[in-house]
Picture 1 (cartoon, helix red, strand yellow):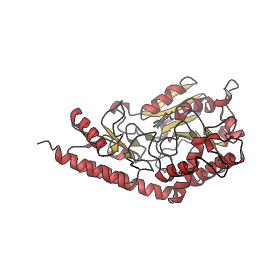
Picture 2 (cartoon, rainbow, N blue to C red):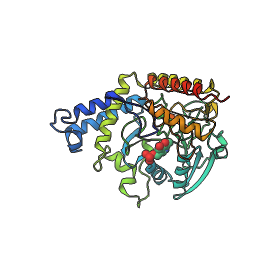
Picture 3 (cartoon, rainbow, N blue to C red):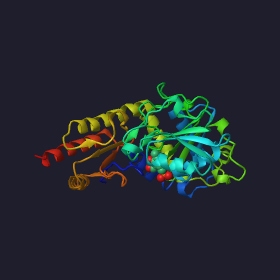
Amino acid sequence: MSRVYNFAAGPAVLPLEVLLRVQREIPDCGGAGMSVLEMSHRSKIFEEIIGQAEKLFRELLGIPENYHVLFVQGGATLQFSMVPMNLMRRSKKADYVVSGHFAEKAAGEARKFGSVAIAGSSEDRKFSYIPSLSATSFRPDADYVHITSNNTIYGTRFPSFPDTPSFPDTGAVPLVADMSSGILSEALDVSRFGLIYAGAQKNIGPAGLCIVVVRKDLVGFAGKETPVMLDYRSYADSASLYNTPPTFAIYVAKLVFEWLRDKGGLSAMEKLNREKAAILYDCLDGSSLFKGAADREFRSLMNVTFVLPNEELTAAFLSEASAAGLVNLKGHRAVGGVRASIYNAMPVEGVVALTDFMKRFEVAHKIR
Ligand SMILES: Cc1ncc(COP(=O)(O)O)c(C=O)c1O
């Protein structure tokens, strides 16, 4: 078997242990004599799988009892619509922090349902930083405030995270966070949020699945015309089994959660993620060829973005890296350059292999 180091932004690398377990259990899952792919979502074995997935996810993040955990299809993008459809319930106002492409999309979708104000934007410098916010950035009568905790394309993250005291207090206004590319990468105080959502294909499992963590008092306010599959209540009332859920994705997510638990949970993962990011950023900071794309204080732990002096060198870097087994390093088409996504399942060895390669590349292509 030959595995590459896969730096893709998502769908992304999964732990090898998880992939091998899936392979082992494909012919016979849990003694059923069939794979999870062939199993009824109402079967006892699958009910155990989804129940365990929720339990482990709750334990990893320390999710309080007054929150639902919902397994929803449609990726994170569907949440751009479901959030306003369910949460714009009183003033029909919502405030969005536009820190990147996905935040912009989320705000655009919310505009279809009510009044959207931009609480802060970093578009002026191509989303290379996080806009500064204060308590006055938000309307006190807004139904919610929306942020994107980690900006996958630009490689930025909120430095004063919403669960730290330095993040401006939104008062009684619920804070909603798209955590698609940051979830499970570090410890988190869920109680600071009204709702968190995360597409699965980075730190959770297969694409298509999205996990929504929502405070119970925020559910049940979607308008009467809301399609049943777009109402959080349908998921909350049925333990995410209103219809046939993405069973395989939920099964793989459960295995990823077991893997995380066995690795020591989120504090151990955070330590490792900080170590991996530091190796890569130190390499960038010590280089005269590579340059980090995001402002230092907003650097992401998950998506490390950088540039080379010109297109030619960038193309050479990407193709030589790929030949060396370091793949999917091309930056998002909107920004170009290089992006190394180093999610939980990327081992330290992968990051070291990348920085060793970068140092060799720099020596070979020294600009005189
Ligand atoms: C932060 C963020 N939000 C939303 C999305 C959209 O996710 P999906 O393609 O699952 O709808 C992505 C995808 O990469 C993302 O990184």
